[in-house]
Amino acid sequence: MRDVKITFLGLGVMGYPMAGHLQKSGYGVTVYNRTTAKAEQWTSEYGGDYAQTPAEAAKYADIVFACVGNDDDIKAITLGPDGAFSTMKKGAIFVDHTTASATVARQLDAAAQERGLHFLDAPVSGGQAGAEKGRLTIMIGGEEAIFQKIDPILQSYAQKTKFLGPAGSGQLTKMVNQICIAGLVQALSEGIHFATAAGLDPMAVVEVISKGAAQSWQMENRHQTMIEGQFDFGFAVDWMRKDLDIVLAEASNNGANLPVTALVNEFYKEIQAAGGNRFDTSSLITRLKK
Image (cartoon, rainbow, N blue to C red; front, top):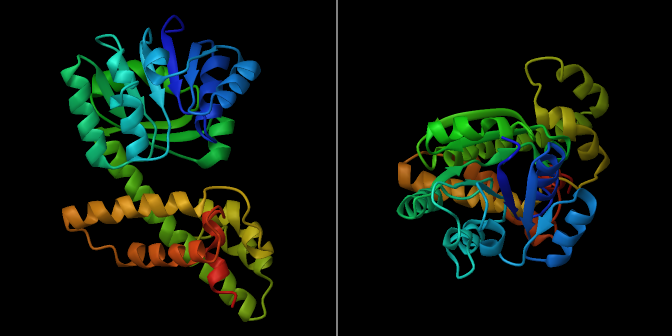
C-alpha cells in the first residue's frame, strides 16, 4: 500500500497534521490548500509535493483525502471548475473527512459513481489534539469493500475506524456525536457553576465525580480550563454552530425531536453575539457567570 499515490486537500488545523501522518507513514503525499503559503509550509516541514488546484493535486492520485470547512467548500474542491473529480482517474477513491451534511455526501457519492470513482464520507472526532497525536475516531459511510481497502491507510491517524452503512452514514453518525457533546458540555458547565455557587472547590468535585458515572471526555479534558475561564483554543463555537445547524436540519427531515440540542444551539448563538466565535465549545459556562 506504500506505493499508492495520495493527495490531501485542505490543510487546516485538522488536515495539516493528518496529511503529515500519512507522509510520515511512508506514503508519498501531494497536498493542496486554498492558501498556497500553508501548502508550502507543509512541504517544508514534511516533504511531499503541493499543487495549485484540487484538479492538479488529484490528477494522478489513487486516493484523495479532503478535510475542509462545510458543504460549499467540499463541493467546490470536488465539483468546481478546478475540482478533483474533473481529473481523478477511474477507480480512484475520494475520502471526505469534512463534517458536512448527509445530503452532500449522497450527492458526491452519486457524482463519483457517474465518473467511475469511489466515495466515502468519513468525518472525524477527536479535535486538533487527536489529529496531531494521530488518535482520531473515524465514522465511515459508502462502500464497505472500499473502506476495507483503505482502512490500513486510515490507521496512520486513527485510533478507531468504523464502517456504518451507505453514503451519508458517516455524517449521520457524526451528527449523533455532536448531539451528545452539546448536551455534555452544557451539563458540565451547569455542574461546575453549581459547585462554585454552593461554596465547593470545583476542582475537588470534578476529581471525585470523574471517577464515577458522570465521567466523560469533556469532563476529563475541559474542566480545568472551564474553571479557570480559558477558552482560546480547541473546537471553535463557530464550527459547533455549523455542525448543530446541520443536525437540526437533518432532524427536521427525519422527525427526530432534539429539544436539548436546539436549546444549546441557541446558547452558542449567545456566545457568538458576545464575541466568542473562536472560543472553545466549553465556553458555554460563560453564559452562567453573570
